[in-house]
Amino acid sequence: MEILESENTIEYNLTVSQFAKLCGTTRDTLRHYYENGLLIPHTNKSNGYHYYSPSQVNSFYFIKNFQQAGCSLKEINELLHDSSKNKIKEVVDLKLMEFQKELLKLHNKISSMNLSMWLLEKYEYNKKHTPFIEILDNISIIKTDIEKTESAHHSSDIAKDLQKHFSRSDENFDISIFPTGASISYDKLLKENYTYDSLITIVIHPDDGKNFLALPSKKIVSCYHDHTKDDIKKTYKKLIRFIKKNNLKPCSDLNIISLINIYDCEKKHTYFKYLFICIE
Image (cartoon, rainbow, N blue to C red; front, top):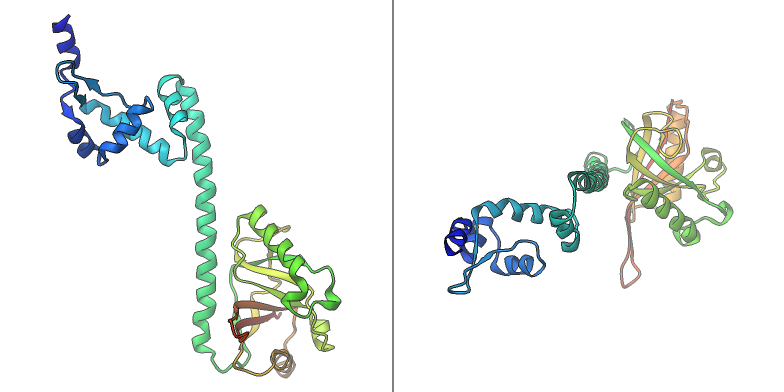
């Protein structure tokens, strides 16, 4: 019997510290796995010490990978001891789907930050706050109509609409809600009626004809405006004058994107906006 035990356990020749170093982990982690029935060392009867086998490294990384994938130790225990190959495949497929969703969210966040930085960097070339013509490529908008447009003068007037827009964007599309702004129809702009009609978020995303709507034209008249300049209504009028002077044909609402909008403790308002109208 002693000979049989020696033959079966001779490969268990790594101390806990040695095995922890081999796996790039800690003794505490190995103890935690052992206490949960996941990675069982051999116990030497003569000295009571625990020893691991080099072949258990694969089991360690199986546990670690599934733990990093969000599986509980109980779930991993079931996979190790009570699951078939099909069950493991089912769990892996489910985790891969979750990773793909997380990857999409991360991609959308990166796109949002890139778009915002692009708008901010362009400001360096257009600091005079005068309108200019440019091409806005690969941009779509998510649009939410404002219920009471007649009283939608400021963001405080459309708090419920903002909540609806943000929830819709976050829950349904996994799209970052930045940069977001509002729109005013061109007809209302001509009549100097500056109440908002819709909330919009601009995104780098293909048009799907339903939720993500491509701009009617890539060619736009745009302008920057910040708190250091005159009343924003003067910027609205400046855009209209530019369009008329250059015989341009507008084909969209005025879109006002808020890149920065802050009130400090002294109620000083700091804001930075990007405005644009699509033209044919």
